[in-house]
Amino acid sequence: MKFLIPAVASLLLSIPVFATPLPAQPHVYVEGSAEIEVEPDMMTFTLSIQTVDIDLAKAKADVDRRSRLLIDASKKFGIKANDIATTALNIRPEYEYKDNQRVLTGNNVSRQVDIKLRDLKKYPEMMKALVDAKISETINTNLTVADKKAVEEKVQTAAMEDAKARAGRLAKSQGQSLGAPWSISEFNNRGNERWELTPNRNLMGSSAKEVGAMRMADSSEPFEPGVMKITAQVYVVYLLK
Image 1: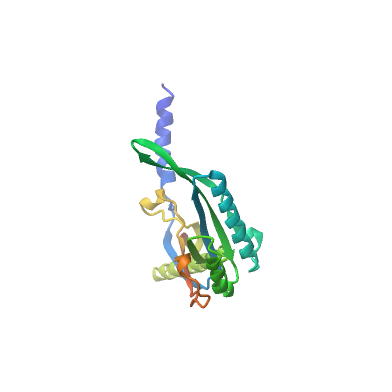
Image 2 (image 1 turned 120 degrees about the horizontal axis):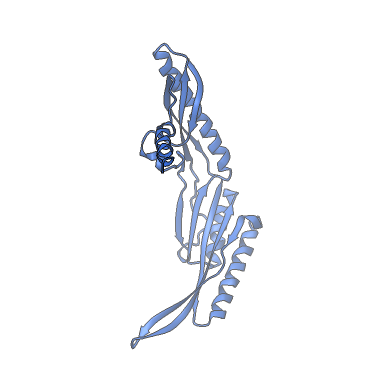
């Protein structure tokens, strides 16, 4: 017990050292931000294939058949195998109550299939093919960029350039020169957000829609991918000299 008290005191004294994200010497703390626009170059189709049948084997066979039909239809548009992702089968019995007795009414068998289309010019024809094949009741689509990492790096670099420019202006206004960065972070450590470490970057404008597959059969669907905005924020501490 004699040795415990100094150890605890030492720990408490060390907490403020690690709690503050700022240096002891003169510095400037700035936020840099940037926003760029990019054209989406990839669309993901998400289809849910589902069948309910009292005969589990028949339900599974129907879902498997439509899954193969979907994969074959996709490959006709030049989509590679690694751009098609299927989940494992989900099998769930369905019941209803009759005369206070639980009665099996069927087996719900389903699977989700995601397909990445990298040539957006093929979108109208592919959508029509999926609708005409009557594979799924609904088709969800989502636009994005294939090389998201490259776009994020570009906007992060622009955010850093903005941070340096801001810090330089602030330092100059006080007759100081800007030194080297002391810390760089994507997390805002100035408030309670430090406990919610979420990177301050975001890809916006990713359109998604759900199409009633049985109601849509026109390949002349008007389609313009538009642009997407990606933003980034960085928090930089520069030393002054």
